[in-house]
Amino acid sequence: MADAAHSHAQPEGATGVLVLADGTCIWGKGFGATGSAVGEVCFNTAMTGYQEVMTDPSYAAQIVTFTFPHIGNVGANAEDVESQVEGAVGCVVREAVTPHSNFRAEMELGDWLAAKGKIGLSGVDTRALTRRIRLAGAPNAVIAHDPKDRFDIPALVKRAKDWPGLEGMDLAARVSREDQEQWGGGYWELGKGYSRASWTGEGGKPKPHVVAIDYGSKDNIFRNLAKAGARVTVVPAQTSLAEIEALQPDGVFLSNGPGDPAATGEYAVPTIRALLDKDVPIFGICLGHQMLGLAAGAKTSKMHQGHRGANHPVKRLSDGVVEITSMNHGFAVDNQSLPEGVEETHVSLFDGSNCGISLKGKRAFGVQYHPEASPGPQDSFYLFEKFVGMLG
Image (cartoon, rainbow, N blue to C red; front, side, top):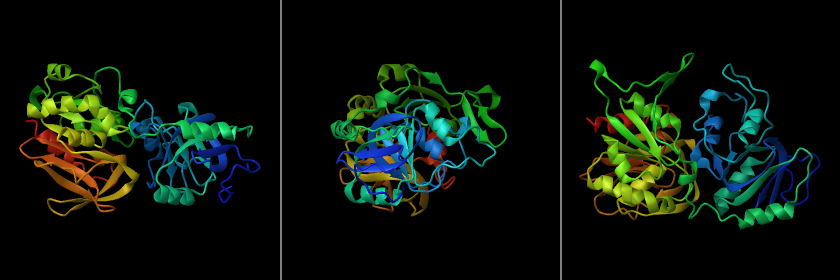
């Protein structure tokens, strides 16, 4: 199935298909949920963490092609879920998903995907698909799975063509939580699971208070903020300045999330600018980094293929140290647009794109990558301590 021609002709036994907007059909074996879903096709180069990837809200409206051939061999469990809201709509893998072999597994990947309403497609030449994305950019497509091999290809092509794409799309409001939440989750330990976060430090003194704006956040970010010594209140993406100030934060965190930062910035940027004017300490990750950049006067743009994986080298310009980072973004802050007063702090060693900024004279900084995702595994944990250290 991996070497089947990319055409409308359906090979015998094909129960799944990826239909690109240009009419190309990539056939394979479907697994997980049945039905169809539309999104942008991207690729992720990580060798582990497929469950975290599929539940990361930053992947909303995307179909993830995993370049590592063996996906699903450690099964799935409840502890490795990053968010209960929408994540990736589907995934494409090379090899058929085999029965799991891991003591932490609670169910098979296919069963877990079905329970989450996410579609899988196996038996695909993922090298060829990844090369296509690298050369031509991330295409819009429909992923479909029908155990009875029935597909209306013209209708699927039309759906892929008619989908407007991520550019100009605000997805943060769609995946953000609806209500304010006092974060109580602690850090994970093998054999112990997740601890409970305490809101008080030594002698019962309250810890510094961080208000985290949820644009499509990963739970492990809040765990790391708590581990670094903060008490965290998470609020919806469109929370007003007055509502944030009423919580009396010592600092504000801007979370990751999906979609076009310029679209989300229409309601997020004015609030962030007002916080900067009040000299509130701010830390942004991924989309939050892009929101901070827009608020500071920089511009963002859609990337040709994006950065997605757990092996991305980033250079810290202050001392030349290279951090191995996890990334997931299809838009970036344009480092040629950084205005006076905004310092570039990190750059990608893959393509030189911006991966970090700080605002001169302000207690505000952001990084494009995901320090909570442990790819190094702990190269970038210092950023949480740096932020919490600003709040004393």
